[in-house]
Length: 389
Image 1 (cartoon, rainbow, N blue to C red):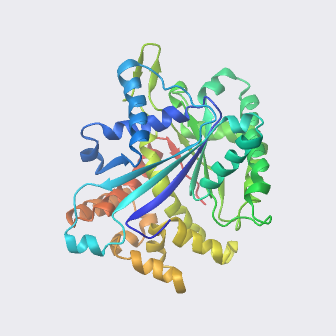
Image 2: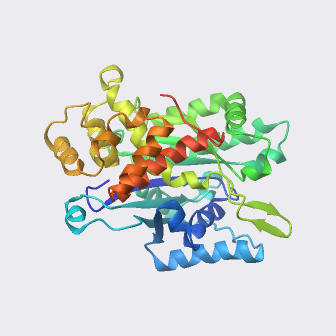
Image 3: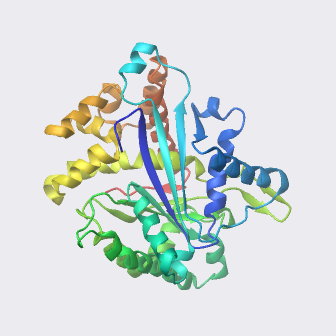
């Protein structure tokens, strides 16, 4: 992430064809265009591409007004950039001094067909180029299709083993083309979350049951996937694959109605992209002496992945040279009482910090603190399960 007027975060979404990626993205963006969203959530969301924004909102309206599911895309790879702007305006002097005043989310959609079918020629080159474009992502979602679990009820391992093996093989095929001179990468998605898409189809399954199902049925395949990803990245101690789980549902689908008010987990997309790396990177860098994370990786985690992590770690890690500059540039973003102990702040203290930020017109601080609260809320609802590592 660059130090600019935006905190830039990237999220990569992987799922086989039909797993609901298009519906998920449309249902993430569509509600943000409804009246009252900004007031309720303290921020607004705008697609940087007018054409992409119109297409996603049309998909959303088709579901809301006509119970019409978006047409699945095939072999279509796209990146969608969204500007997330906090409500309210700072006083001019304060605003000009702040290094950032909004969040930029880039959503990378990786075609599921590339995990399931052989490709060659220009299509193979496009697959490589697409994967390279998402290397700056901090977070990747691996989608597990609830419909496929239902289709394999009682023998879920048949689907799950195939799914994770396809993910692994798809990444292994890219390895030689992605690595330069065979050297593992510094910039690479380091948090791979297993997500249950279409979770409304399995209402009795909470995130703990989902985790137990995945680990119980596919621990070998998940370990194999983790090993393959670990071979592609420097400092695999700073890597989390299949340690975090989330339930996602775009709506409650019935034959004649799509109830978009019955969403699950979509309110966690932005918090997961913005705040989960902040939490995880802080822990990893604090463990540097034990886990031997290379210095180049530490630099990437602080200066290249999440400016917010740099703000926190300025109180715990002596950052020499350019890293210290990065932290200095962003030190005015969050107030000290929010930075100190943010990772261990209880819900009540976070709510107080959010209220204080609003009183001080520190709107981005309020939004980011709200994201932290959203992650806690997701855990309380048993929709989200974060790794303790």
